[in-house]
Image 1 (tube, rainbow, N blue to C red):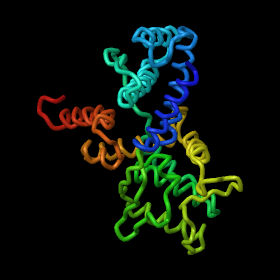
Image 2 (tube, helix red, strand yellow):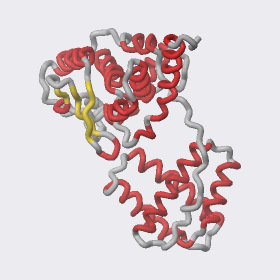
Image 3 (cartoon, rainbow, N blue to C red):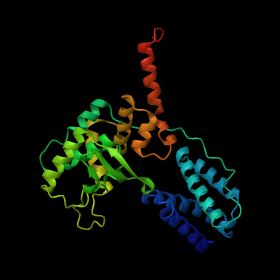
Image 4 (cartoon, one colour):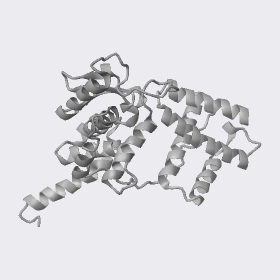
Length: 302
């Protein structure tokens, strides 16, 4: 079972990377979730070929995850990985029956995103106020997250040639290697120019906007871990919310855009979501805003 299973999983992960162009982080998550499922199957059915397992194997696995008190969102994510695998196995004619087809995904309660208030956002953006290279770097990292709503994986890979000052835009490479354009306002433009002048001394020969200073780096750009730690440090200075992270600044961007009149479709495009369903998490904010407008504007609103 093990050798054949390994080949199936390996080919599936290669398919995700090369054909569907999933990110490395997504592929890593799929690999971990499937490895957990495989180990369970090997324990429960050591003598049955992986491709011959029945629907009951997945149902037993789902019950096991529930007994382990995993969150419904985690169980749903693991099941999604298994379902994707079986779709691949059908496509490759490894099996004739998709045993996941009738297994329902558990309902999940989408938690509201963590974001900064307008005051907290203003505070955090003014904190790196020094005139050394690290201060200029930190100030630009925070401003880019807040001004553009980009992901951390997109920020670290920005190249200087991707910045178009005349248009007020940056080209970024998002999920699935899909390229999109994000906007930069006057303040972000100014901070980028200051950063380039102070850090690069007007020479724009560097490939990445945030280059790596680690001698063993094989990417040439700053690591996501380094950026995460930088943002986390400043978040702790403006809020007691331990869940705040670089992704929270992305949520803050979307939330403040919505509060100032942007519609969900515009936010979807700016965030680089492939479907509007991913942006729906912000709809609660739109409802709250409409309620407030109604109370203030309608004669019977109060």
